[in-house]
Image (cartoon, rainbow, N blue to C red):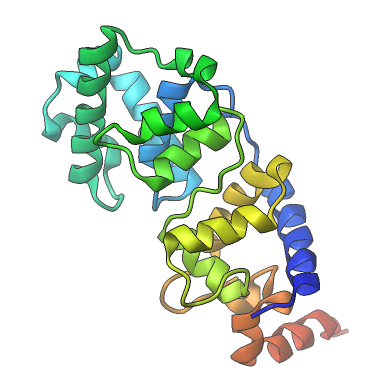
Length: 237
Ligand code: SF4
């Protein structure tokens, strides 16, 4: 487990890496759209989520058309992603529930309820889970929340940012304590990029990972020496 100072150094490095690769261009989406994007984003890379969300926006006329579409039609949006059927079911169930209560597809009035109340109301939707509510809180409700999905948790554990024994909720609380609110979105996208490009479940690519020199897993597994020799290797003349 990394010390507090090491964790801060690691986070500074992660934020620096993330800044180079992440554009937080979707942060202006309204609450309903962020909830839907969260369903796409959980356990997926940013590219996969962007593609799925784009498919939904371009292939269907509006959210109502998605609400009345078949699972099969929706599954195409999540082609190649995990849990395509479950994501489709959640999306239809969410839009149905919103429609039955609001008769429209707009949840922005939640902004007036205050953060706690708004998060509580979002969590009541059948399609909601910790990740999606945290995503909406972070991206559209102006609160401090870190969405934690399996790739985030795997990478955070290996880096030593959270303990191996910590379950999702506890890990999320630790990360929320460690990461300033202003850096929440940067952390979320940065760690997701590292998880998608290097920190695979099997055979993590530590020798190419930009965080290897500060990573607990890489150090324990002797990757530090490899990385250091890579850094000091001189070009053959
Ligand atoms: S160094 Fe290896 S274990 Fe650590 S974050 Fe990078 S890929 Fe994952």
